[in-house]
Image (tube, rainbow, N blue to C red; front, side, top):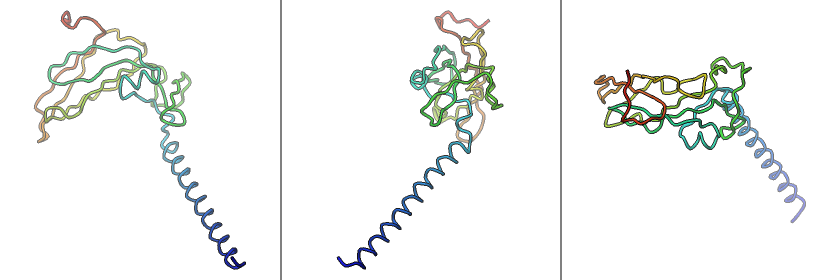
Length: 174
């Protein structure tokens, strides 16, 4: 190899190194803006399943429910948390949290997991994430459940009653 070819090869390698550094810098900047720019690390989070809540060490109690027209996968109480520097990390919600939407005085939350499409109807439970002061449910909760058919008509409004663990056959809501 002559001197010209070696110089040409060094220039190509230098340009490739610069381009690689720019691509890596762009990816890191994109991650930073996408995660921290939208304050994903500041906002109170809710688990998507009992398994996730258990893995994050947030699970408190599974709750019972009664609703005739909708299938509910799970209803449970968990301790409030935020993400860390990634969505896999879990951080406690502190009482001195300054992010206004977190409501740090409400350290617990009820999570209702359900499929939004059931029996060719759309199901909506507006209060499917409830915030609590205490780790236990002191009174039964009654929440509206809206069912819409595919033509966007509201054919049915039902009630979801949530209560602490007890025999569902003995349930009698005053």
